[in-house]
Image (cartoon, rainbow, N blue to C red; front, side, top):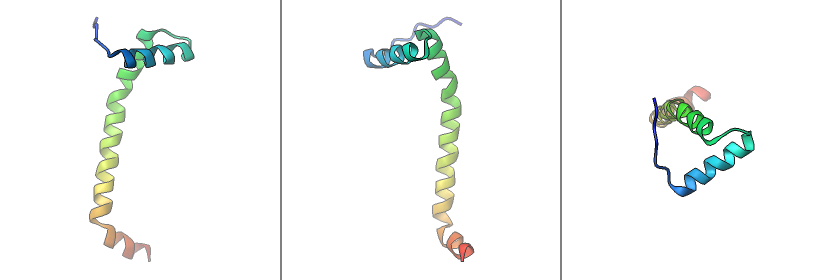
Length: 66
């Protein structure tokens, strides 16, 4: 699938820097970033959920730790 996303100049500049550091091009860097996004979002959602549970059950968890 071909796409031509319009990136803000600062984002494009950061992608170019990353590509230069990695010895790749802009396209592979964008593909990598887009590919990692769903996993990162899922991880963050799980982390928030775990924090919510820990806060809700803080008293119980403290008693169990004793």
